[in-house]
Length: 530
Image 1 (cartoon, rainbow, N blue to C red):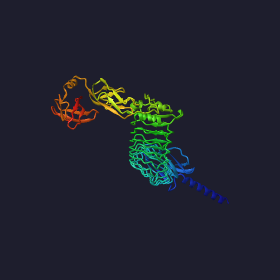
Image 2: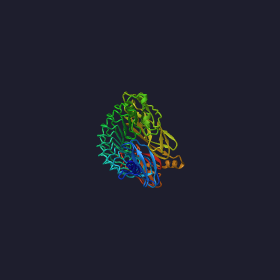
Image 3: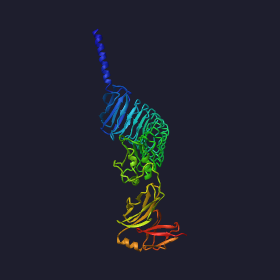
């Protein structure tokens, strides 16, 4: 009996010993994840399994294993490779090796077919094969160097983020379970999401898209398509949208009337001339700067804003800063129409925009029909000033103000009162535009040098005959000289280098007044009727 007991005990000890020894190395056929790293790199990753106390083995040196138990939760662990390979064995369902940066250059998960979650953002991966990982529901591989990615077999995917790579194309037509798709900052020229009807989030910003069809994505709550080349965007079917980022495109119109759940609307950097948000009663943020919105359009936008409580922190940003190309139109608007509804009107640095407009919502609008400048041409010396006067018609126009600009500020600048200051010698067109944006008038300003040489040239140059019909000569030209002819609107009509006594052929010009520029000097030319 004692002998039998001893034999039984010995057998049990042997079984325990064999089991213990077997757990120090992965059994044959155990799924393995292989990480290729820089030599002797220290790598951080975390992993999880379908059940607690699941064994896993980390091989940092060939044949040397660290045995750990993993569970349904995960914590980060750090391992140092002896060489360039780290292998992780086990029934792993979730693996995260993100942000090892340049230390992680390749990742092989092909044998781990039970993997449901893979997060490998922020490394130096140039390729990633997930074709065997058909159980994947979440894949995060942003901030790498991927040029291709095939997810056609990963039909269980609900979340896919591959932003900040170098992909030129991606097919997600088979991934009909997707709810979240992030593909921003790649090189995509097209994107077909027509089959992804479950999408709630789509981030495709900073690509090269010229068109985007989201008509079948009626569950979308967030759309970021800014930084592309879109000329049109139809979001009429996306009635659940709460956030729309479509800035830095080429949109000329944007209809958000059906998007009544919108809270964020960022449409800056487009070509919008009007924006109506009267149906968007949940809005709290609007960034619409860097659009050609005139003062009337900006006032109309203010008047369409919904009422907001102070706690909503509602902000509308019609200009990015005081140097915004459209800032003059913004300054002429009346922000009281917005602030009365609980909105803050500010620049990007949160400073309040000091506007001077007086239009009040509901008042009748009389649009300008004409703007007239007191001069169509003018001459000013470098460092000196002249004043241009603009008259807006009719006299009872709602927007009587004028927005001034210079086509070349190195040659001439103009302030808000029409005061022109000469800079470098040359010609610049000064434009006066009505605040409602409908009309403009131009003055071609010639800036002359104050040096003695320039003054002498100015006194010796001349045009003859003047008026002229077919050709005109320039008096005072003694060497080959560049001659330019401008219309009164500043359009260059003719430019050629003339020899002394060589005439200018003007037979193709319509009768009217033109400016002839020679050596920085502008002279008026009258082209007579023929």
